[in-house]
Image (cartoon, rainbow, N blue to C red; front, side, top):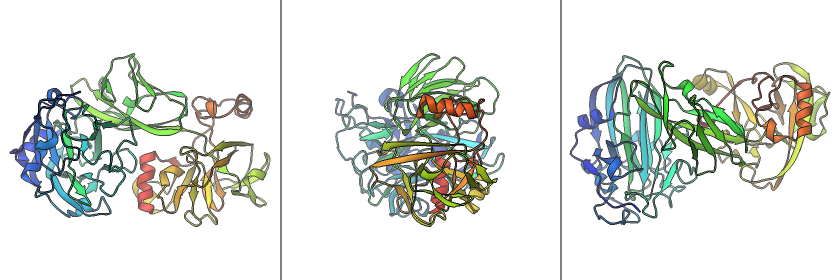
Length: 527
């Protein structure tokens, strides 16, 4: 049990002082202003000693929908969480701010936010933060979805988690590796739950004046306090670590070079923490979700799955040889092979044919190469659970002439202006599960058993399935664990250069394949 002691918070800090605390190397601050109740903001210090394991840094800025000083209490006992639902509904925060209202279906209240102008020396800025709240855990998936907002040059910055929002509804106990429960007074804070250190990364205009707005707001009502703690000096452009994503078969192990996209590619980078745990080469961290992450001597990470098909996250902290530090997130998807369901009609040279009636040697119509010889058909029956249940696309949503069911990992071809605007491509591939909108695209929860089919060609192809454009099977690392030895031998006979552990040796994807969070961003524009 932790001991209740008040965190030192200077609520008299001015906007200029808070800006000076927030910004780090590679940034020149020009102007700053604060909007909200005077009791809802401040500069905190001594957090590593007073509230170990909670704040993102020893000092920083706190913005609250209540009174900032209520983040902790001064009881001096192990009763660190005296009030089960700490709420301050009499602060004079900002109600109905247009930007914050745009983040949620309901109106927002008690917003507290900073607005600043600055000149960066780099092309990106980063910001490390912790979200803590009394809304946790009871109201995590309710209308009371308190939210953090960060806008850089008027554009909303997003986290690489779920729907991209830094909100109670998106980041909670459903993502156990990045959420910390405090309902049993394990930590010195009044808040019932909080996140590990998370990061916003946003593009900026180098050597020009940029704007940033950072804050937090209550949603739907003014009750139950939520706090945004921002690490001091973390809003910087000198050294930026970028988030990573990896796909791997359920139960397999993969190696990931997370440092390859961090910084400017020069100097020595050192990983110091994995999911808030101090590590050295050779150390292994067990995640709450059951996976193991090991730091190797060369700075890469080995990720060992637990056999579950799921999406999970963890963070890491890295420093460069100039002493700069940043935190980034890793999203890993433990997957099964993408596939069609029984009854799906595939366009062939002779017309539409049910996928279960296709045979090797048949000519199937492809978008890029016309009729192509089908080389292999795989099939597998399995019980449906939350991770294997097919995704149903309602008739017409992607040009399909009837409801289309595909596996969650199956990639769909998305075309149009938003693909071009967001990713610079006329056509992109997006996993079915990343397109879910709970209206026209949603899990087929009425299914108790599913039979999946895999269609393999000499290249990765785009096919017509029930009229919608979707991918063929592209051998990947899941081949080594998703199929039996006879099937693996059959695939290796057709493609001798195929590496079953990595998928290399088969050929490139037919289109740019979006990462999970990119797919969700695109889906939000299509809704």
